[in-house]
Length: 340
Image 1 (cartoon, rainbow, N blue to C red):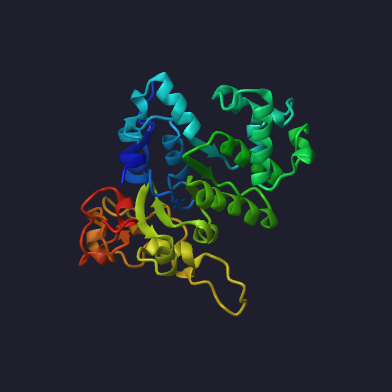
Image 2: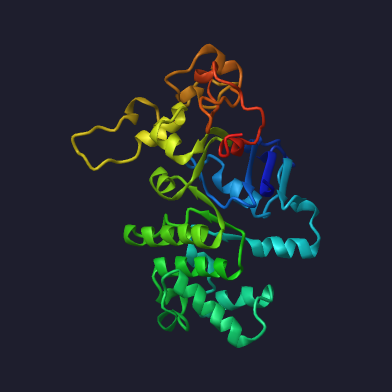
């Protein structure tokens, strides 16, 4: 299998300098590696709480920011070394869908503008008539009626309509990868299923890989084939979404899963015994970043960072609870997705 989009030992650090005084560096992403395969379109969820590094990862994959260490490649070419033509192709084939759809619109333009711009920029149509046909097809594919949508201003549409227009815009570019950063967090529950179903359809029918960034394990489980769980910039657990969510092996993943609300009022949530945050007087760990919140923390956890263990064939968990399991030979956690 060939790599389409790849992170190799990527670290991103913010701060650490200043004219008057040195500010402490913040490690937003710490030695993360994974690959999206070219000939195996999947939906991969990147999950974690706020501050886990999810959005930093998204911006690195889109080439919006540069990594401090490591390599980001698209079709084998480093993003930082791409020519103008290669970067234009990358921009067309890797399309983002962000959390706030309203921020992507200029309120002085009708929504047609956001759909015609990629057609002009990437020369997707040979004529205005062909361009209009592409727009109509894209809108219909995401469940919008062109006659009721085109010609309106952004404020005249609902949040769900605006988000689906952004999915249609991404679709116009004929992408190979769609990177969706919390795409349903600002729409109501009735539209959530529609947008997620659109992403599944693009993956299933058009062979588009989707990277779904979320804090919501419920929707991650609903649509994803694989999942990578981040904690403070590091991979806590990764593998098949089915296995990770039904049988989590890392204490942090268990915390996330136990925090999912259940409809039975007689059933208590199971995450109440794990602290939600580290206390101000929490012991400093030079090893596992989750040690201060972990009920299973051992002496070795405080002094050494755990390697990525493989408790089963399609799973990796960075936790000393699994120290009797084999260690992942490659730093690329996506190796467990294919059972390598």
